[in-house]
Image 1: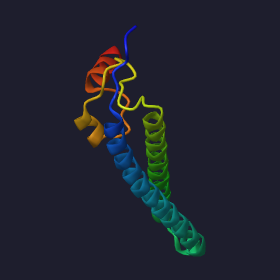
Image 2: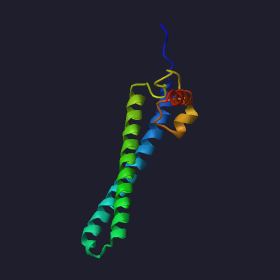
Image 3: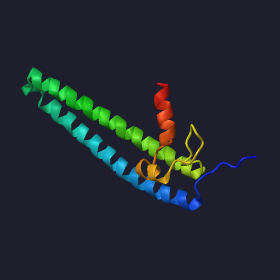
Image 4: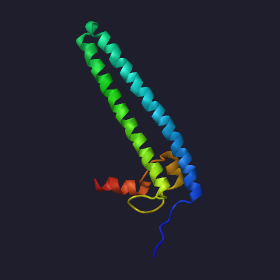
Length: 127
């Protein structure tokens, strides 16, 4: 029976700390972005009488962009939480396509990665 290669408990602890730190920053940024968006909405209701059609269009695009940023940040937080679960069950750092270990350098740069560069390239060629 083949034993699946995985990162050591020591490596997993290093990655757990890295992911937790990124998660703290990501959640802080999400809350800040959310409160900024809410403040803008309150101001817009108060100041709606002086808007020109051009300003309204600009406002709509700005609100749409903020919503996209919020969604991206929320997804990033979810990805980091998933990474913590993989660390707990000791599957962190194993490429979900090749089954090989994702290099530490990649995980340090993108700690929520589930694909090795090799797998990403293979996936990209299939499209």
